[in-house]
Image (cartoon, rainbow, N blue to C red; front, side, top):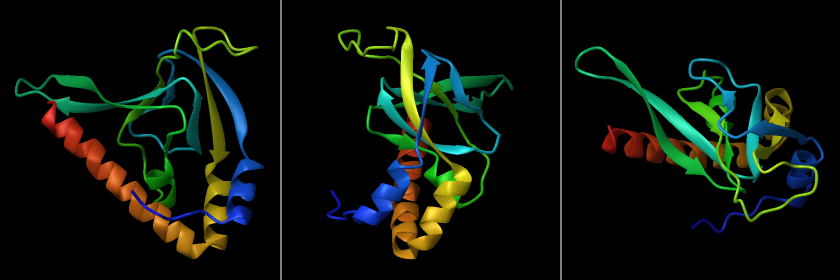
Length: 151
């Protein structure tokens, strides 16, 4: 585990630029092959990451790779490197015991940080940008490892 701590001014800039959005369970947030318009943080409920692979007969199969729990995030790697998504990201499930006022049992809440704002904030903090990029590459390697092991 890293001992890295984000400086308070960086955190304040991120938090004050977040917007809340609700999705129904299993609703797509990002699609494979498309650019990402925001960094997504799971707040209430989880997020599911899906990948695609081609079978020997040519059929393409969609497979769940990982579940991103509340507090987790997705999109930093693609946004910082200006890449299209290699995955589908969809709203996962909410703990049915978790009752949040204004959010139905089938809704997942995420917080989004627009890609342009995320890049701008990271440009103001080059050391943090480098740290985020390194950590995001490690997460991506993990996603690919899990994906390839379960094909």
